[in-house]
Amino acid sequence: MEKERHLAAKKGYPDPVHETFEATSSMYHQSLFYLLDLLKGSKKMGFIMVASHNEQTIKKAIGRMHELGLNPKEGNVFFGQVYGMCDYISAVLGQNGYLVYKSIPFGSIDATLPYLHRRAMENKAVVGSTRRDREIARKALIQRFQEKILPVRMHKSDTTHPQK
Figure 1 (cartoon, one colour):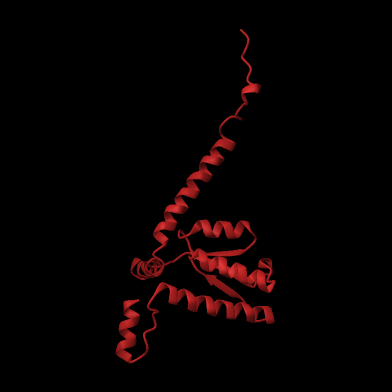
Figure 2 (cartoon, helix red, strand yellow):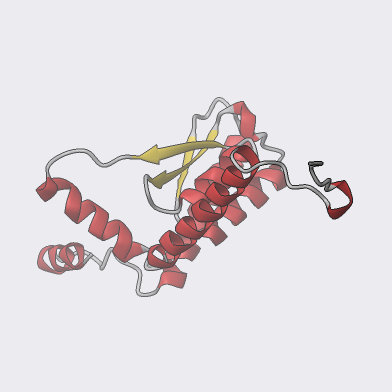
C-alpha cells in the first residue's frame, strides 16, 4: 500500500488508499450494493465476485442479496477468499448454497509473497481468523473421529456385563 501511495504522490494523483479500515469498508459496501442493485435490474448484466475475508462484508452482501431477492444458486454472485485464509467463511457459505471460489496464488516466491503480504496487511483480522480456522478444523476432526472411529457410546441403562 505504501508503494501505491508513493507512486500517487510522485505522479500527482490523489492518495488511492483510504485512511481507515472503516472508510475502505464503507466504499467497498457502497460499490458492492451498487453492483448488486444493477444485477437485480438486469440479471444478464454479468457476474459479481464478492472478494472479501471480512465477515461483516459477507453478512452485508448476503443481507443485500436477500433484500433484492437474488438467489445464490442462480450463479450471478460468487464469494471468494484466498486459499488458507478464512476457510471457515468459505465452508459456511458453501454449506448454505452460495458459490465460493478459493484463490490460490501461483508463481515464484518473489511474485506471490508480496501479494499474500498485501492481503494480510489489508485485513489484519486474518491472523485471528486463522486461529478460528484451526479451532473449527480441530473441532470438526474430533467430531468425525468420535462419529466414525470410536465405538458407539452406550447409555448407562444400555450397559451390560458379559457373563462368565
